[in-house]
Image (cartoon, rainbow, N blue to C red; front, side):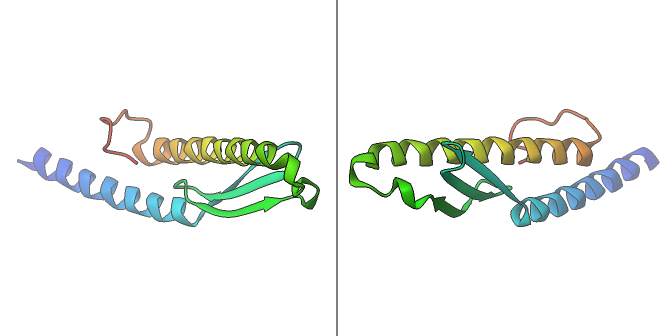
Length: 105
């Protein structure tokens, strides 16, 4: 029976660490850039866009489509960085143990 209690205690500790990690990810920010820095997006560690910066030189009407593509590229860059940060934090929380899909983030 002692093993069962140890397992329950470890599960509670893991859950607590995962909640702490989720809070850390919400507070963390990553920045994605595109077009040599002409467009940048700041995103939370959980993938929420916080800020978009567009260089004023791109605000000409004929460059509208380019601007839209750069925003998408900057968002993808920031999201990839956020996912990499989340995966690294999850690895440190779980001690490298593989978790079933959906259990982590």
